[in-house]
Image 1 (tube, rainbow, N blue to C red):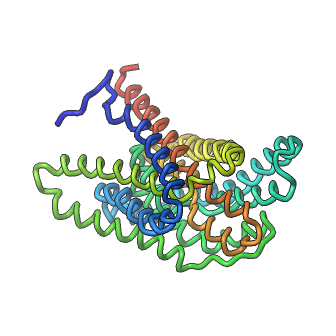
Image 2 (image 1 turned 180 degrees about the vertical axis):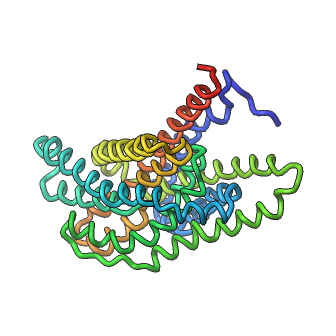
Image 3 (image 1 turned 45 degrees about the vertical axis):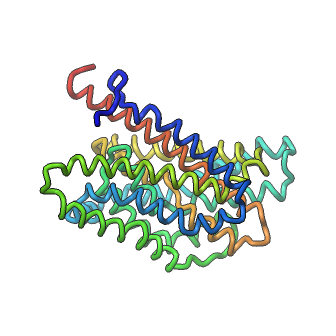
Length: 344
């Protein structure tokens, strides 16, 4: 079946933002009608949705390319520097500046709540993503092999670095359970990679393999919409309970994501990396691991409810914000291709 196109843009691309918005609304409605069931649905629904978001991407990469990217110390070094020397201090700086200088004088929230919110935002910023970053890289046509290798590096490094940054920036000693990271790696990296590799090896010689990849791309979009519904179902009630907190945290996270992504992307381009590699670096340094953030908030800051509330807002904001970045990158990629083809 052909895809309807309008001025060179396929219909699916045009309607997808609308479907994302509808999924968010459905999730919020379910969070009020079936609030108690939301937690149970989230426990099983989010891992299931993430698997079927990541698995289609893994059918496009080869183990050999991932191994080469893993050993590319120049790109790994750049990623590590941006993720661990820049990201935690950038998010803390933006949070302190926005809430202490702008929000606190307005007296919307008292000083105690503001302090908890700042800690929550710091938790959102200290741990790099080891799951959905592969989806964003794939959707933006970035170097997925490089993205997978970065995820492997981050799964090792964040166990060591996250407690240090939480202590240094939030003045609290925490323990990062390595089994939590291992579980994420198994669920969102190893298992989809094995499934994707087997799919590719079994089906790549078939004539309709490109059609199969396209169908898997549709599955990825459906899984993304499903995951949005589930995440907003489990956490969406907070939007109505604390509406002002949503836009406040949203401003900080928008600045954080957009600044950090473009620092990663344009630094890479300055160093002569191609669009695909620069995009992988940009998303790897921008996307955050909200599962680790929420776990730390619940365990280490149980006496401070607004820390957990703030970290719960994180995934509600990250998906739409990262989708905006994906759309920006797709447009940027098209312009680069047109420039090199001599059309502009």
